[in-house]
Length: 160
Image (cartoon, rainbow, N blue to C red):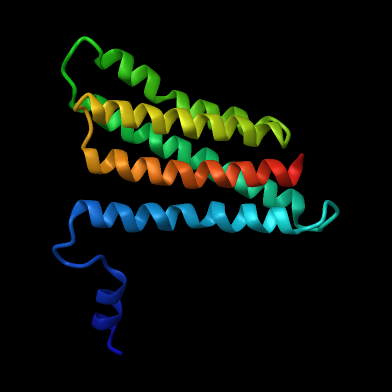
């Protein structure tokens, strides 16, 4: 295989729609949380890697929440109405929630993260219903929200 072939195979398809690319990357982004939560659930309480697994999962979830807040920040930049300042202010809450969750001991950290992801998913869904976000994005967000909330529930069960 040539370098050109190798490079092309790792790149998104030429002409792939933003929806397709977002779907693929969204599910790829869900994979670490799935793997870490299932690993955490399957290992004993005294496992050598348990504390590291909890830290990895909690920090990854916090990063994802920050990313979601960044998406909302981007949408706020495109708004030019009376709610723009509120949108900017609210868009930093996911990052703050994830940061706080990192310092809360499990299983409570996973409860906070599950609630934060569910609230953010509902916010995105309501925004799409109001015409402020594309419908395809809301559908994708609801799928990914369901997945990440399930991983947080698994992590909660593993640490309760």
